[in-house]
Amino acid sequence: MTLFFLCYTPLLAQELYTNPLTQPIVVGDLSTSFPTNYAAAKMRFKSYSDLLKKKKWQYSTSSQPVHTTSEHLTIDSLFIEGQNHNKLFIITSGIHGPEGFAGSTLQDIYFQSLLTSEKIPETDILLIHSLNPYGYKYFQRTNPSNIDLNRNHANTQEFFSTNQAFETMSAIYTPKYSATTGLVAKVGFYCAAILKYITHGKRIILNSLSGQYQNEKSIFYGGHQLSEESQIAQKIIETYLVNKTSVVHIDLHTGFGTKNKLHFYGSDEFTSPDQLKLVQNIFPDISIDTGKDKDFYPTSGDFVDWTWKNHPQLKVIPMVFEFGTLDSQTLSGGLASLWTSVLENQLRFYGAASPHDKEIVKKRYEMLFNPQDINWQKAVIEQGFSALRKAEKQFRDL
Ligand SMILES: [Zn+2]
Image 1 (spheres, rainbow, N blue to C red):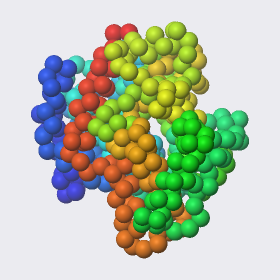
Image 2 (cartoon, rainbow, N blue to C red):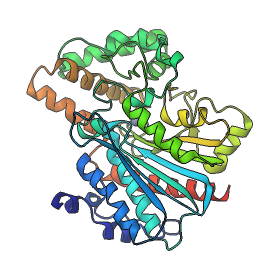
Image 3 (cartoon, rainbow, N blue to C red):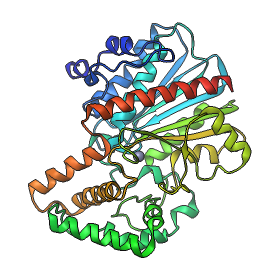
Image 4 (cartoon, helix red, strand yellow):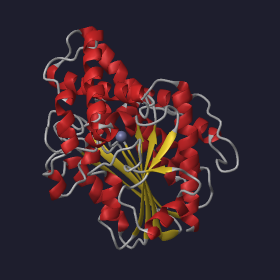
């Protein structure tokens, strides 16, 4: 319990985030917001039911164990019944483990803001915490089987597809030796990647990141079947979609895009005027990127797309919030991000050339997905929270 109180002070958070729609958010001691580890984040999320008891609102929770041989790994959810049962506002986090720190934080701030109101929320609300608890606990993007869960909500055709762009880059992405971070290794990786860039163009690199189902020991591997985590996540969503007519599903991510900036990443397959209008209604005056845009890449098997594709009878607005860290849209930032992902994957399968290399890989991985930088954390909180509240308000009025 001591750890919990060190990591989180509900009253302080409440004071900091009142009247979010009318006043700028004041970010105080960020250590009260960003959890220090998975256990602290989970304990905080589970404490919400106690806080809700005082409200006398209708709510339900679930805590579903994942990989039962591992210790205390659960996907947790909280559902709050609103005034309008036809609409469901979903916020999910931690599908990529290390991105759960920012995701948990935003879910917490959003939840605390609900508590400050005397009124029952206008729409039903569903928060799912830590979609990849193993990755959150052990600070890796994938689950224990190296499956990228945001490429795993796929259909049979995708599970057995071949990503040609990945095939082209595969040798660079999957070195079969221990991770080395020295200058020679860096020059080798950068030269090989730039050569591919010159030969095949930027699009080949972007498309190679979209998910692959060919190599289980490489990056962005989506698996060959629905993982345990994905099954649980889909089941939770299905449970609360009964009797709904419209749904917003926001999934929280970090690591791609301009540093300290929130990017809105919409579905690549939203092409009809009706679908686009719906998205613009919820996210007005916002530049929304898709996989077809020049600096972004399409993804297969991503979670928010599963929600809308599998429920054609509903109006579903899928959206990914992506908080940039290393300016991955520039050539140098993109290569740095890519090399870090490759090194971390190498470290897991082949170890590191030295303890120093191991330390450097881990440090870079942290900078890519959960930088210990107060300005970045402040940007996540301010921009993320403001966007969540705006989207919620637009959805309410839809
Ligand atoms: Zn992510």
